[in-house]
Length: 161
Image (tube, rainbow, N blue to C red; front, side, top):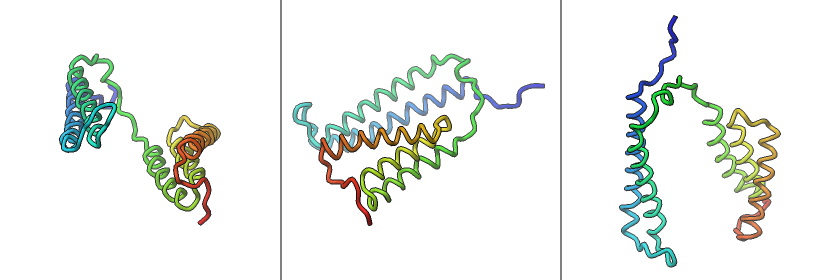
């Protein structure tokens, strides 16, 4: 009996790469055009348009590279069966952002940082509660050192209410 899992054809995978590259180029152009209306400046004296134009150029170049290499993809690399959608990650990532906003306002930088990393890490099925906890604790320490101590961002570590 034949395998009933539908597999994408070679032509379909190439088309997907072409569309992906074209979309990246379109987004890049969407950043370049309005960014060019601002003062761009130079590397030593950047203007307000420098960053969007630079990112737009990078997106256009990467999109062109993806579209150009779409034809060279090996056939065995594109005949994988379709995977089930990952609902866990799709729920945990936006949930972590909501938790960061709420805890940032009512709890402070440290609880908000811990929550966003912990909940996001749970979105990966390979992470355990312990590994998510350790990652969140480590990133909280890094966040306190970088943002609160070194950069002195005006975001209190703890607030209640």
